Length: 217
Image: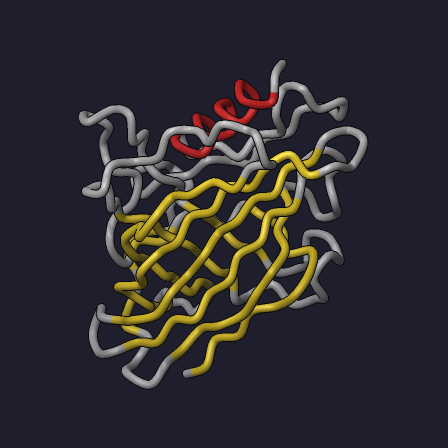
């Protein structure tokens, strides 16, 4: 598969809420569980986190409890601050770097989010951050055509869920921290339904394998 076609496959994968290893990779294909506000895995609405609450951190994520060969580097950076009942401000960024089998960089997909909600589940097990997508962007090697970008009016709601009830160091297995992402709708389909709702948490399907996040209340 050519690099332009391969990067297009990455773009499509992001648009339909699936983070998948490009088909040209020599590693076994892996995909992260895709979740949405309407899925059975959704944790439902969360309560207010309090006007002084904040959640910040930078973590490396994986669909398994250890690094998955061929999956690339998936990182999430978040700096969110509550501003009253179901209100918040801040930024979040989800970035996925892909590499060729020889280790050379293949391209990067990034989703930047403007936070509009920081909330905590009533049972205290999950923190939720939602927001509108500011931009979906790509970075590709020199000479590689960039995949199509969404229109300037494409700002869907997306959501992140952070587990708070799983003690243990990141990367220690099922006892480690977990993070979920709702994904985004297909920007090429005007009729595509939203996959997230404000203050509604997706299931925490990714494992934290590096870094940490902290909720301050």
